[in-house]
Length: 89
View 1 (cartoon, rainbow, N blue to C red):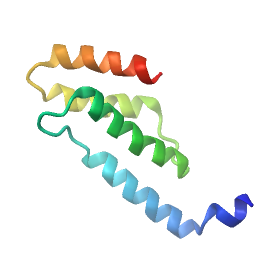
View 2 (view 1 turned 30 degrees about the vertical axis):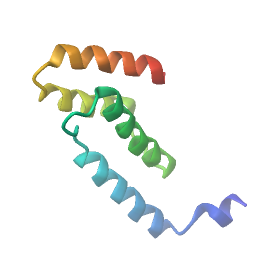
View 3 (view 1 turned 60 degrees about the horizontal axis):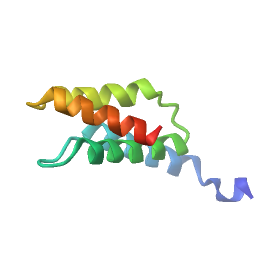
View 4 (view 1 turned 180 degrees about the horizontal axis):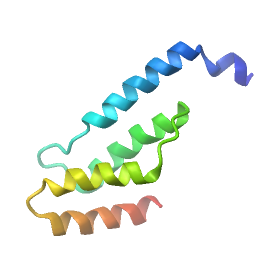
């Protein structure tokens, strides 16, 4: 059954490529909370892992921290991120 629904390898590669691009382009929207951004990042990261990507957690954390570094109120953002991490872990 697993083989039947696994899909064509070309399709999986194309889907993974699309997800990788989506992950790279993810940015925080104006007025978006850190928790909501974190959730969006995790959805794409989990989809990538489900498609066979071996993304490590450190890459996800780096992505989020790079985004937060661009924010004006970094201290508040980091505290919000830590609270989000505790809620999802």
